[in-house]
Image (cartoon, rainbow, N blue to C red; front, side, top):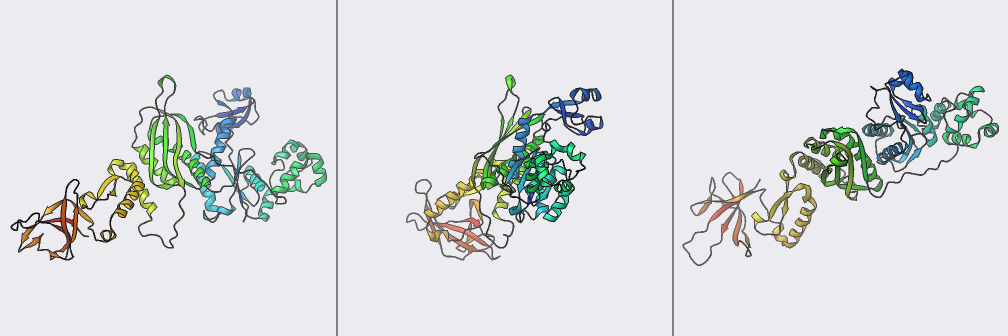
Length: 498
């Protein structure tokens, strides 16, 4: 199924980064001394598109006037297109602040066209833009429906019906001839199509017929797709000086959306992100505040990254005002293949568990969330060390593999208790048997450990012991050194089985 989504951003020609452009202010954007767009209050006050600067000031002396910034508009449109790459790799720029997306191959992945449209609207809302969205079987048809605010058409029959009701002067090639079309009573695209094609071509040129043929599915359409850059770095100039760190989350979210689109375009996952909080420039310039987030599990979804940033920003105290944000992705790797398991893992999969650990790190600090990293040592109390989970996963797995390679296979198969005591507890002896709440009975053959000749020599015989309450314990007996027969062996409790 071929389906296109057209996105028209009606406020993109405005200076969308200006804090004064809002529903509570009479703001006007000028181009060549004429009104290009106006806010709701400005329109209520009498401002109209095409009005000169002097006329606006006469009607609205307190209106805020802004000059159009084409460079910033192009950058904003490019940022929106980059964020949309997470839904389809086929995104192209169209005329008049419009984007076109070929989403036919993405419908099943995102749960259908309605669910996909909801996600696209949510992404654009997070980026800070209002959008007129349309769906159509043809790209030019989607463009016309979006520009005319005519809704969705999922089939050719409904598309033709909706297009026929649109104004005849809506296509770009028809606008120079709007007065002539109105004069002959041609007010809609349906009436325009019923005009004789040879005469229409002589009067308006071939471009208008080409647009109509493409919109109605009579000719093929070719586009230049947006290509994501090889590396990612995005910057956002803030509206004003920000004093509270948690107020930066909305701007950081818009940068994360762009990074998500870039990652999906290259089939990559990010393992580390760096967010720079830029402060004042000039003589009072300060070095940017750096938020370095290392992920235990590489990801390409923005929801988890937003939660991590919310925790980090919520606990951050700014030393100076922030005027800009810069997001960088210095560490990326190939996107992991989806799980081939038919049934979901109980308690969530491994990625869900690592995301929970990352949230704990962001909330409690890296020094308070530790992970066990095995060592190649036979002594149980020295066979493990605790390192921060934020940086330990890859190194810990590698160390564990090396430790397992150095240990013989029979050692790896021996049972170990779930709870190892920090310090062994000396046991009493009653009737020549170790005692811990009750006499202990040996339930396994001994496991002999002799290690530490280079530092602290240990010679022990370990047993699995069982008490009268059927609880199992991990105990060891020190081997008797020398030939002193009067010395009795000492027993210690070293671990508890679950």
